[in-house]
Image (cartoon, rainbow, N blue to C red):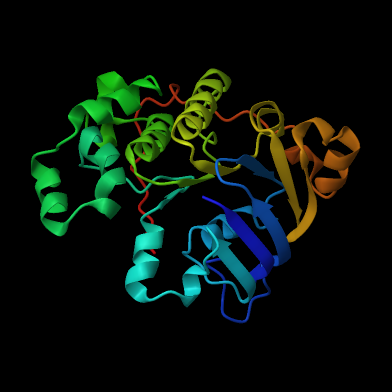
Length: 276
């Protein structure tokens, strides 16, 4: 899917109506099938940008075009069809705690299923082999029939990523997919995600806190600072000087402190539900 942002400004989805815009005057073009990482310090507008691209948040100014069409000028039914071609993976995946992993993964297919097929899948999942293959790419095939509330935080995060690979989306929008993973799992997860997108020709836009991973795994890097575009460059041209400037007020985030090992927790935390 081709993306074009022209002078886009937008507020964070949880912000008050009178709050300042979280991103301001962004103009960016992303080609069909391209893979882009978005980096920047906390509060720089990365998540807000993903919500704009997912048609979950209407710009306060400027315009968004997906494959040459403005989704916000479409009819309600056309907008729903456009959203069905997008996959937004939040940092904390919205997985019902008592749901089986197989059902949680196959939920990625729901936007393109009828209501009857969607309801039937809750009790009689179809496409079990597809779900198992997606989980296998994240080393989770043995968790196919586990309940979500029996998984660790890192396992839930990888289930959310596996869901993207069974969807029919042509645009993957992934928010901080490695926050609950150790370095080994992080390398595997980002490789599975980028390879899965490449195999189907899908566009991938991913926010990352781990700068080294972004530079190593994505050919193009967009840097945001305080809601503004700081740079948009090939990864090979992103210098240490540019990074120090990007994280000038939060240099401790530049090194990307490693998260706690996902297998250290003895009792998995309950899944957090996010609705919009």
